[in-house]
Every structure is written in C-alpha cells, then in structure tokens.
Image 1 (tube, rainbow, N blue to C red):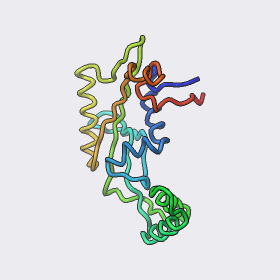
Image 2: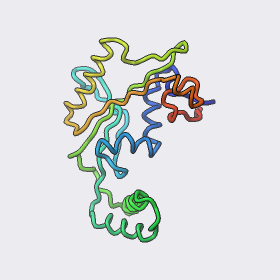
Image 3: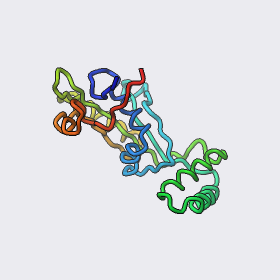
Length: 189
C-alpha cells in the first residue's frame, strides 16, 4: 500500500516532517539556504507548554554541530579527500564528520548561537479536491502567530514550508492525487 501525505488524516504534517528529515536531498534543499550544512543537529516536533499563554509546538529546530577540536575534522577531511580524489566534494566532508563523530569528537551540548526553525503545513485531498490548512482568516492568523512565536524565541532564521496538492502536475508525472510527489513512500504499516 502506498501512503500519500496529502491523504486526509491528522498525522500528515508529522509524516511530512519525518520524511523530509530522512531524505538527504530534501533536507539539504530546505536547510542549506537557511545556513545549515550536513553537520547539523535537529529537534523534531518539540512541544512547548507555554507558547504565548497556550500550548504549541515547533516543527523543526536545527543548528550546526561543532567539533571539540576543529583540527580533528581538518585532518579527517584531508585523509578522506586523498582516499577518494574523484568523489563529489560532499562525500569526504560526510566521511570526515562521521569519523569525528565515531571518535567522540562532537562538542555536546552543541553551540546555540545559530538556531533556525521551520514550520510545516500540509494541504490535503478531500472528496477529490485540494484543501488547505489555512483556508480562513483565523487559520492564516494562527500560522502568522506561530511564525512570529518562532521569531520571538530568538531564532536566527525562520521559514514556513507549505506542501499543497497540485493534482494536474502530479497526474502529468503519473501520480493521480499527489502534489509533493517526492514524499510518496510505501506505508510501513
């Protein structure tokens, strides 16, 4: 069975967040422009009990990781560049980060001087029609308040990721009811 994130159910945003974070290319396309590289930490679906006098959540928080000793990373990077001279530049970087992490060289807790936030919203299909989670003035105001709340936390950068059904585009690509075609995966259940 194939599950589409825009199928009408209450877990579509949570599902989209997990799928985004498991897919290196998608995660990079979202977070690299926000200033985060591959050597970063992320906190997903953090519940905040005092959010402007009401409970709320932050869909994704992230920031760069740091090495205890930056020379360890530089040495590991050079070693992997020599071992894989024809590799894409990101491969030696990932291998160097992995080497440093496996050797216990990551500073923890990470520095919090650069933290970004992402709010995720997903449209859905009901009765064959695309629907939005922001279809009223109140819904738009709630989303705006949520983004303002992220900014009030003192985050360096904040973004809103809106995943909406586009049936025409997806039909042309062979997906009958899916806008974010890349977020289709076999259902684990």
